[in-house]
Image (cartoon, rainbow, N blue to C red; front, side):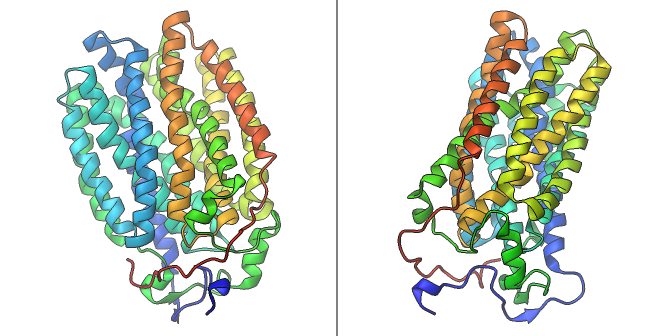
Length: 439
């Protein structure tokens, strides 16, 4: 095989799959791991925010700053974990996440100062999340071609399910045992559950000596999934991707989206209780966001296969702008429920479209590293959004300004998405290491 004619990662290998295609097992296992990791490390923070701030007398802006460091670590380590997944496979990276999340729960239960909150939440909870989305979405992408969008959408539904389970479970634990014991319990659950599920993950069909089903592993299927964006199934190396303008355009899109989308996810519970609504109503809003997001991610994943990731992402960003503005007008339980459902749909659609856009622009052979670097932009954005909203609240005693800023930033991300085009590779693609021995 010449260096200019490198077979893509999706190429046929040893033996055809029989019975249930193991790719769907990988999707199911990834769904579970994502649900647990996001629910415990991410969505639970909105429940812990108020009681922690109240116990220590911290402002919401200062407490929310923990999410800044969390997002920076999550984004930065996402680059590392993506590369490790390319090289060693997802079992190792996701198992590392189980250890980090377990230790994080123990340490968070013992904090008594801001610097301890920042350190423990960032390096253990943020580090754990870095082992989830980029490694799992990269792995699932390698198992599918024609149904890649649907498969990634189902995986993303796991993160949506985390909002359904994470916030109410944490609310119950905090009410029954206090926030310190709640963190300890969640840490134990994470260590055991994620540690077990990670052992069923596999890098790719090639790592098991399998061949994709005919419906997936065909040139026609590849062409069909790329047709809507006129993208040839060509794999870039990380170095080649970094030397394209389109990569950095994606980086900025992810960063601006990250600033805005996280504001309701972190501050909705505080926003609802500030309106005089009960904590159970606030938790219900988060459940509805998670439920609608989970459904949206699966449905939109299938739409990505049909209409193209760029088109779906653009429509989702525009919709998210409108819903962000709607938070300002939501002043009672019913209106918050409706806005929460709509926000989950918009947010979930973006989550499902993003991995598909990366894989269709740059291929899947080195997707872990490429996606990890590009998605660091989202981590940077998420490091800004929560404390910004918290400080806006501290200054104005209202979240209205934060929602307006978020809508403006999302509008800018939508405009940038219009500029996305297939990149051109300026140099021949060198041989990449075989994935055959990676597990």
